[in-house]
Image (cartoon, rainbow over all chains, first blue to last red; front, side):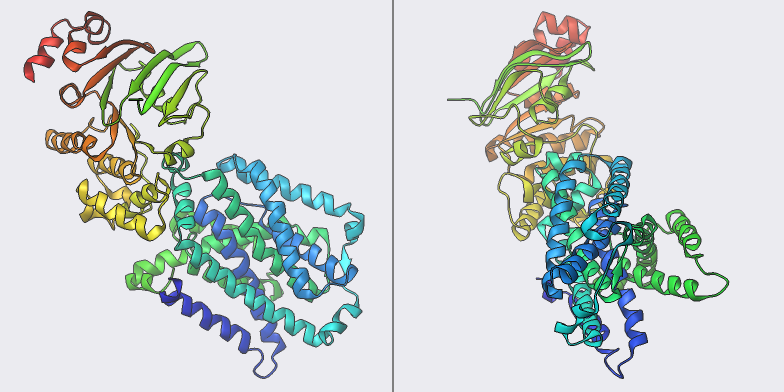
Length: 321
Length: 250
């Protein structure tokens, strides 16, 4: 049972802190910092299900977030849906979309799969840029009226914040539950040697499609919430390849395959990114740093920060997953 | 009694090469069938065809009463046909216990994780790897990795196990341990089809031997008969005195 694992309670505790800290003193600045960290953690831990657990590199991971944002914004502004219903619908729709693409491209392995995901990302961006109902290249904007049923913009933003923290919490628990399940064991076997796994009876095609689709759900829900909070979305920002790459860096910085690692890497990278973006001399320098970081990690610490931590404190393995 | 596995007219060509050419045979429940032949005779290709890794160009495979010719390897495995690999394929970063648990989880009984772990522990005891259960599979010696292959296959509780050169590269003590283990499988209700180059071992273990050369079956029968078969002596062994060596030393 995952309730017996210390990590379960660590996740619950951290999520409660994230939810409560900004409420204390109504601190909007802290809220904005935490929401960025939470989103980074959501994207990195769900990507970890594909890369760290299953061994399939997905460069198109930003599609989940962007497409979720588009569907969420469309349903709330144009169709007048409630935010929660719209976010869940966005998650389901993107999962289904990912399942269909997964069945098509998951027979590819290694670099070929990775390239196919880049191809899909470009295709989705091109499609959305020309899709009339979603505003083509100009994108979608939230009209002020959308916030009214939620009690005005201030309360709507807080609602979005609490929902993002809930998704953050569910992301970490989902990773934990999969890791300790038969499904997780099938994924690890596929990562280690897909041919061996198949001759052992693992239906690799089915499990890969399932995890690919599942890894899309929570990022899409988060996308719907974040773009609703931001009030606008456009194809250039929503489907930017560099964001996908930054999420990969976060996950590898912390330690791929490890839930704590992916989450830790996401928070640290997000802090670094925030610092670099706001510093006058280093603005927009974060991609150079990300590239350099990736090189250093791959070369010297393939286990990431968490691998390094486990070497220093072997007992930490009992608490972190 | 209907055989456990029936193979009819199996053919596989790679370009102009006839790797397996019109091979037919059957394996009964609880039987140990040996497969020998010179390098490149098509032995491993035959294993790949039976386990579904390769699709045959012609012919049919009937396993436990079902036509499995066009089945995927994982589906065949779940029906109770397990195999080992000549070039071992450990799941390197997983523990030895987890490797065997995969076999138990996704094998014939489709066990839940907790039960699969118990089966895996019992099988590790049986193959004498229990003391390494927590170690990553990559840390095992070559003999250990071969036993791990056998353990994973056994954990699936198969009805038929295909062993691809599990004895090669092992020292005499290790060979003795593993042959003892293979010999006990029929009592556990598991039929064995094995490729082996360690002649003494396969001659002793097998109830029957089948010989492949250039993709074709050239002989089949009890070990002593096959070892004396002129075509086998000539085409495969190339040395007329080898028959005496094989039967004499036994």
